[in-house]
Length: 94
Image (cartoon, rainbow, N blue to C red; front, side, top):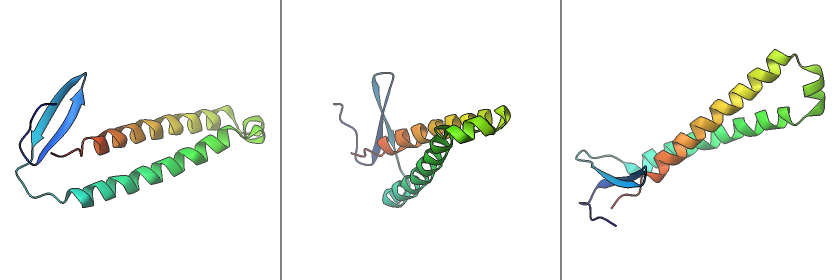
C-alpha cells in the first residue's frame, strides 16, 4: 500500500489507489454518522419498495404505471445506497 500523509482520504478507482489530503478541520466522525443515517433511511425505503414488489396482490391490482414507478424508485434508492457505501469506504483515513 502506498504511504500517504496523515489526514489523507484514500479511494480506489479502477484499481488505482488515490489519496486526497484534507487541510481543513473536518469532523469525520460526524460526517460518517450523518452518511450512515442517510444510508439507513435509504435501505428502509428499499425494503418498502421490495416488499410492495413481492406482494402478489399489489402486482395484480396496481396499474402498470404504479408498478413501474415503484421499480424505478427502488433502482434509484439502490444507486444512492451504492454511492453512500462508496463514500463511507472513502473514509479510510491514514
